[in-house]
Amino acid sequence: MLSSQLSRRLGWKLVRPEIRRFPDGEIYLRITSPLKGEEVVVVESLSPPQNDHLAELLLLLDLCRDLGAKKLTAVIPYLAYARQDKRFKEGEALSIKTVARLLEVVDKVLVVEAHSKEALSYFRRIEEVKCFSLLGNHLATLGLRNPLFLSPDEGSIERVKEAAEAAGAEFDYLQKERLTGTRVKVERKKIDAKGRDVVILDDIISTGGTVVEACKSLKGARKVLACCVHGLFVRDAVTRMRKAGISRILSTDTVESRHSQITVAPAIAEHL
Ligand code: R5P
Image 1: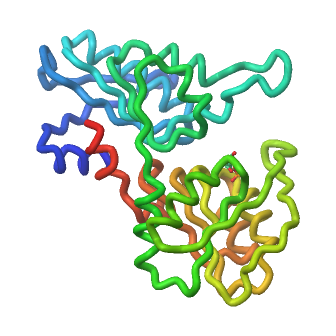
Image 2: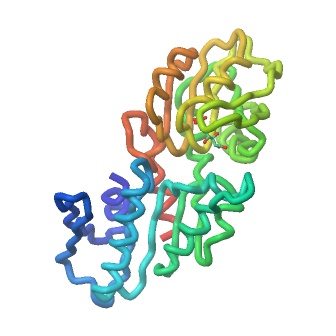
């Protein structure tokens, strides 16, 4: 777990709150360790079920304040709602702004690779932990043949470039248009993939739709891997990607799953 890794690295005490559910679904929280005058760091990822995790985080932060925490930091490895950073259609909720307001109770928020600069702009005190070079370092150990790192949309070019530089690999990008929550259209572009090991890199893999579409541009690749920071893998995302020919799926531990092979603990620890 990220919280235990962080406490080990930094030599800080690890406190595990008691978290249960009341029969009607409400959250029960209790912290028995004394927090008065302490500097407290609460680590909670807003992965699915994100609404439950958000409620838990808000209750936990307020409890820490009530118990006398002097300085309060929220480490949110995966920040949910960051993709709702604009009013794409009139009348839509700017949900990340609401989340930012709710988090104003803390002295500092730390997030790992937030989806966009716009999402960050709604927070008063926030730091973003960058980690695409960690992804690149890990990918460099996999013995990939003539690797090509591919960004499935323009929004991730800078990040993919960072990973490619760390791994000494080439990179390219596609352009993507989102049609619905589960369907995307990726431009048909000829990518020089013949005989190469291609890694599709993204900040988030949710339904896997983006990776599947990007995969269609990679004719003749020797292997295609998918690598992301936040592996949400909702519904049949993993099966979809496997069927599309993805031979390996890797993610970090901002959202823990069997694909979490890269830890972001060292990058977070540098900000604490
Ligand atoms: C969106 O712009 C993100 O960077 C990801 O590309 C997106 O969230 C991936 O979602 P999915 O796996 O559902 O296509």
